[in-house]
Image (tube, rainbow, N blue to C red; front, top):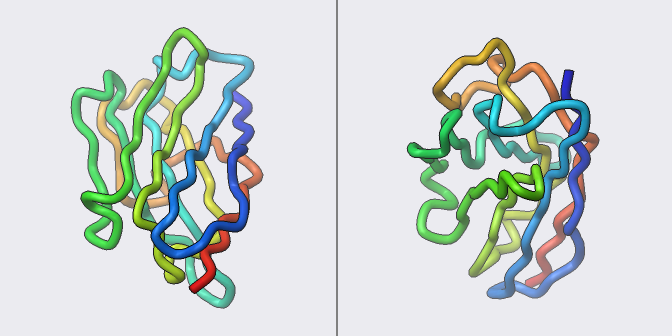
Length: 126
C-alpha cells in the first residue's frame, strides 16, 4: 500500500506559477499509474492530469492543456504537477492519486484510483 502526501500549494496571482509535489511512502510510484484531480468549493472533484505506469503517455483536461505538466521523478519517488499561467478558475484543493492493481493506463475517472493524498490548497487571485 502506498501513502501519498501533497505539498507546494499556496496563494499566487493570476498568470503566476506553482509546482505541486506528491511524495510517496510505502511503495515506489513506478508501480502505479498516477493522476492529479482538483475540487473547488461547491463543485465535484474533477480530473486534471494523468500519467501511465511508465509515464510514456500523459493526459490533460482541456482546461489545463498547454499550461500544466505532470511528471514523475523515480529517484525521489515523487510526482509533480507544474502549473503555469494560472487563472482564478484554477483555485481548488489539488489531490494526487495512484491507481493500484498494476494497471498500465491513467484514467480521467476518480473511481479508478485507489490511493489518495490529503490535498493541497491552490488559490489564484485576480
